[in-house]
Length: 194
Image (cartoon, rainbow, N blue to C red):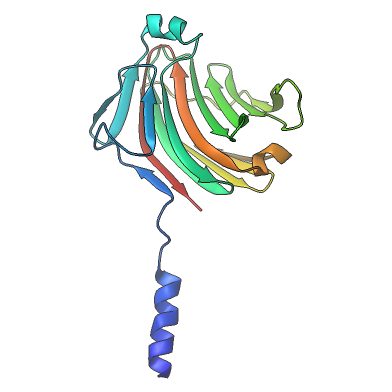
């Protein structure tokens, strides 16, 4: 009996929890994904879209986006993006049922980190930081990792790692998104774990 208990204990230590979400981009249809505001192509385990300027104007200056419907509060999110030289911004957002909660905006000026306080009447973003040295490399895969725990977000991009705090980060979320404006963007390896 003891050997069986030891074997079960050892197996539970080795067991890896299944991800909450994994998009391998192997097919245009994926139940938790909504590919919007552009013609997304799915090939070679990546999603790629080139912004259509007419759609951008029609969508009130919002570019192509991948939405993922997923209920979570604390989670680790990782993905890789490859912007081209014409891409002006890449945006990651964690959303609550009523509004945005946390956002990263990558541009030629660096990475802007924003939170959206739940008690704000007009739901304006507050700047948590502007990291001028954190820039995505055009034409290359850039790995992004975001760990949301309680009121803290730890962001890792390349060799850069920093933790930001705001109460809105700890609120329940209903989806997440990766979007961009101008040029072409490819996205791959999107995984969300507990």
